[in-house]
Image (cartoon, rainbow over all chains, first blue to last red; front, side, top):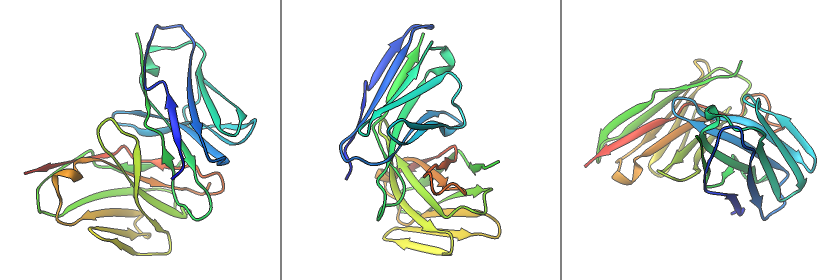
Length: 113
Length: 113
């Protein structure tokens, strides 16, 4: 299985501060995704990447930016955190040919106070 | 737009069968997926079905697909307490070349001993 790690696992931050979440994969898969999970909403796509420096918006991208300067790392940044961004954030990769569906990271629980 | 709907909660007794239902809107979806999320963990792929299939069986899991009604179900036979989790339905939509998945809200399965 593809190795995928998210950091940090938990974070508490204050409203208005910038926050960066990291997703790291070990197997050079092309596609990577950031989702947020909220009760009653399931998982909603924030941004995704289809290669180094190639990213696109998902359905809930407002207030978030991403960067992918290396194949293995996909960073999600909240430029100025708000309480509505309190959530659990999941990174996922698409392993590619011969596989179906995503492999997910363990998640980052972010609380904005 | 694309949408996936699930009921939020299901409670069954250990040893009974569980049926979790899902409806989706995008008839161009190539694949439909079921994921399982245990407390504090990321999502794990349980099974998937290709859109030209009506049924897929994998040990205790049976997936039924009704394309006409855009209805997907997951049946778990002989449900065990270890099956207690949140179950997510997801569709690939018409964007299978980007790998984006649309998730339902998740169904919490409670298994009583």
